[in-house]
Image 1 (cartoon, rainbow, N blue to C red):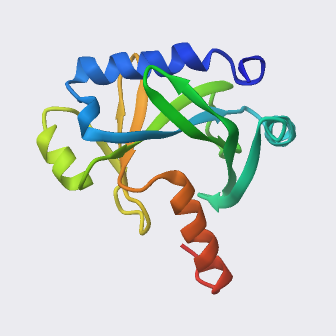
Image 2: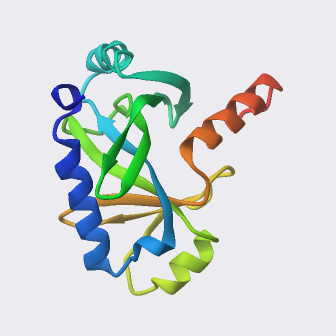
Length: 172
């Protein structure tokens, strides 16, 4: 896996260290549900879809903000610094946005309500662009050293909910 996505151990350790520096305690989080791997081109997205299938099973690919985002459940979950990470998210590039290829952010499930978590950490500069999502609203925290998002439901459950709604003709 490292040969495909890079040094995920150092990436996750950096996230752990950043959370600690920010005053966010592990007891406030139930899991790191996924890490996000960004690509620069749609061709590279297609290559990574195939490459990730050696290590994981795609559980969903949804169009979000005009571009597909694939979710993979790893055959062997990632274990780093007491985190168990079951999923990798692979977004296709967004028109007009540039992301350097590599691991970009991690997403974490809060223990309890996202609102309470944000209120408790009101001293931190959370981004709220994802707070209006119908399913699994999220808040982001970006610093020079790391980028994370926080939400209430783990990614696998959200993908399954979205699939069930789509099967009923309901798009979210």
